Length: 489
Image (cartoon, rainbow, N blue to C red; front, top):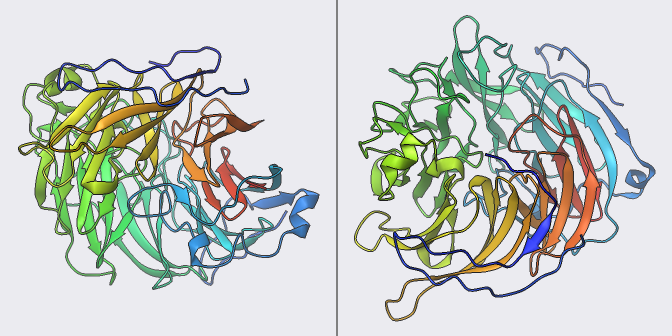
């Protein structure tokens, strides 16, 4: 699945696939060079391993707070509910260097969030931290529960606690997240914490009737829409046990009935990409993985648009869904990227990129164009206008999607590609694409042409999806059981 090799920048066009003919043009040829102890909120237990923060001398010169104003907040996965992944508060990069490192009590799979002057970090030990953005010192921490240890039917996270990225509701001062626990029974619990103190505002079981919590994994990010918080579910790595793709919507009041969506398959068709659902207007967009039986469409390997009450409004399923499911080629290995003019871009493990009409999806004219764009999409996208930057198994790619004129199909054009690396989901800050690679490299590439402007070794991580965030002149990068702040972006 993953190929090794040296890094190469390419502006090679990709051949069209037979599903829909497409013109893939090369727009631009680009070169590429080559400690603080936590203080607990009242009535909470102490994390097993006290966190510490270490700072380099540069951090003392940085004013408190990563940047001024609400634009500096990064309160949800990829900053906004549409999962754009663009920091609007970051200047052009200067001299980039690490400024502090904070050790926490478990692996960090969730993307760090930024609210005001604090960085919110969740761990697989079911602990949440609020760190000072300029020093890494712990403002508060909450150890909520005991995570699930090894012994699951399959999977690649041990222990398994908070995996999906939380979401902060800045207006109400609440942080929403999901823990996974084994006692007294296997259970996923939805929590609302006070953003200022970490104290519990509400908590409730989030598994619905017919769902086996032991088989389900909450890997995708939570998202807010209207009066609800939405939680996506897939299965464990290895596709074992009886799981289905699900989305649960819970009232922001902390009580009241849940709304739910379950994929219409015998099993599988999970929603497992780290961004979870993408939101535009009053709709949630999500992509699913392989489903069984392989020869039945149902909701497997599809892009779906759901209403706030989780009714399916439209659906796109590729014509070759049967081979995708049979060969473990999940279309939902990334989340839908929402583009201007109502367009949606989706790329899965097969490496085919689809441009869809976001209002119709599977209806007449729903699929507008498609092309083979890489060796397999894997993780997530960042969107700046009509430019999509997306991670694949061994490469980072940038495409431009131009709407068609006079009834013509949109044009899908290659801007640049950087190959020979194992990227995580990218973000964009200060006109630079930033990426924390799975093999242990933090790199920055100019959005305009793919030229590398920064590279530094980081700790290799167990997660397939190391997700970083940005605010002002800082990057926040998970490195295993640490978070490192980089200054000067």
